[in-house]
Length: 131
Image 1 (spheres, rainbow, N blue to C red):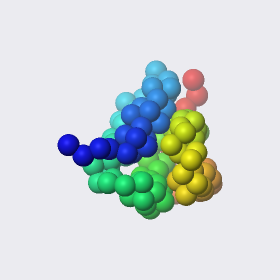
Image 2 (image 1 turned 90 degrees about the vertical axis):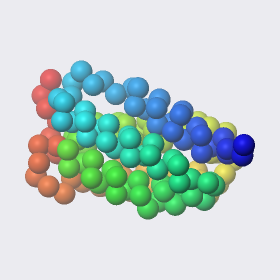
Image 3 (image 1 turned 90 degrees about the horizontal axis):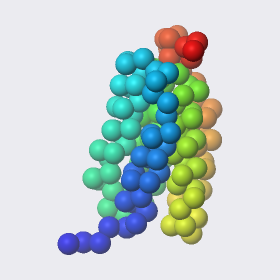
Image 4 (image 1 turned 180 degrees about the vertical axis):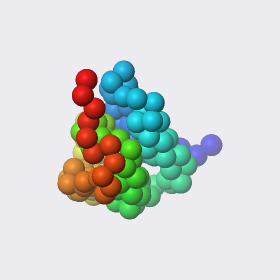
């Protein structure tokens, strides 16, 4: 059995799952919750293709922004940003991330890019529902 790089394993198990657990789904309707689930599941499903940290970096740079952009069509930006903020902050807590300058720089760079993205349609996702 081959040894899995700890950061590849923890990217989903620690960073993503912990961020997902912090979302208050009681405030979301079923369609928005489903859209978040699709976003999270897409990241989890991509894990199988990561054989190295470079594969993870490529995913973060190239695929994650597209997944985020798609999710923005159905999920309010403030909610999606909260998930992504928590996700990346969880990653930056890991020693394995902080000791890999290329990975930590990529996470910070892509985080900034995602925060600047705006919904492309005039769908209801661009506005948070009143609670």
